[in-house]
Image (cartoon, rainbow, N blue to C red; front, side, top):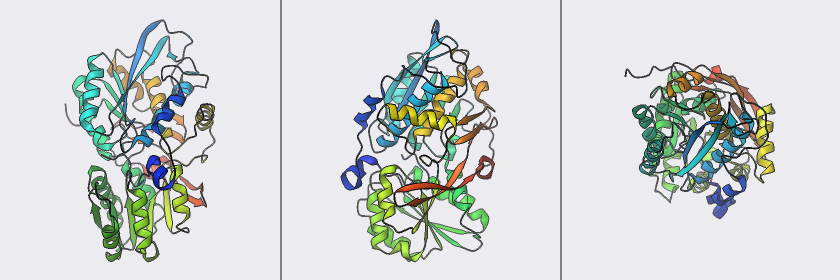
Length: 412
């Protein structure tokens, strides 16, 4: 059910109870999703008018549920990206953009129901999917109904190349793990243990680590905990007893704080090299307490880039009393993709697909390219460190350095 790759996903609301705080109710502060303010183009022609047929976009994402805080990041980023890509007109070539939100709460069944309802109402563009399990259920609907689907933070590699109507606005698991491999050194005959949840998300990470690090000569095994497990000490102990050269942590949701507490208490961080992803801002104090014992890869580093898109996103969010966080770029990029896809309206979905295939554009993280062959989103990734509670970019990896292997769409 989880959306993130080696980013073990602190829920900011859980950190509110255990570490820090954030509420999904703050979404109201962003204003209407179909009303954008000023900005500069991030791709796609914008118009000051809205005389043509409206472009109807359905956002199906985790407004509530265990990944609600990631959904919030995505939604706010989408508003900022829509503002940027339409020059604040809320229209593309005379077509007004109308956005409908639907909450899937991280539940694939709810997501499918919401997607079907929107499709039935004539929506030809769907975006969202905070959770990998959700994306894998919604994507087939796109092919069956010939609608454009732009998956969001959902990281599972299986979304790439799934069908020609499915795209993604975030990174995928392979890109995370390739980033980790970039600073782990020689892995020949090294023992790598993946600590994750026994879910589609966790299992995808295990398979991806085997594919990427195993190909570099590492022996990979795993310790998997039930997603419902509250006491994580036994799993921290198993990870320590495995005596790996490298512990690769892939975690999502509300138990992340308990996991890191267990790893610290069991001395795991002192016994092996531990690698994980840089998480949301609310998690920084926890990692600051590890004394630099954790190595970070990063999908996004707040204030780590300073291009026009990044500045525009930060300015928009600041104006609405918010700040960027881990999945803000995923929403921003989704809006850029929607605007570019629908330059000629949303009645011809095959034309929208062609508009996106092979498109290169500048986004929050830098240069992006949508690979035509399988719709992988090639993008920069980062090595990062925490100085206390301040993240900094150690190295920026070129999109080609972490590009996933190319796939082909299944025969139709």
